[in-house]
Image (cartoon, rainbow, N blue to C red):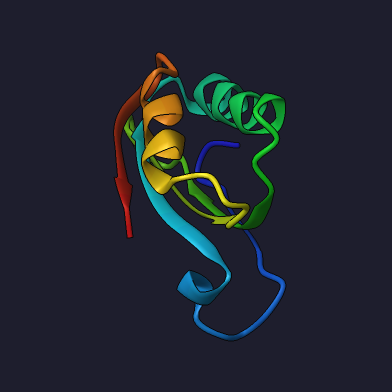
Length: 91
């Protein structure tokens, strides 16, 4: 998946209307991305939109996670515990 950009969106409207918008910087390319996606699935976060750019040493992942009553800070805390995640921010 090096130098790969994948995008999946369900609507053309503002993503923030539909969920928590999160930006991640991560290492370990495919392995790091796999760990992030595994964490999201195991904690039952529903990803509405995903954009991945793993072209450099530090990859960037932008995603929108469906609002389900849980706090966005909980999502960030869980993402920051994933070893390859260098930085996780809302928006």
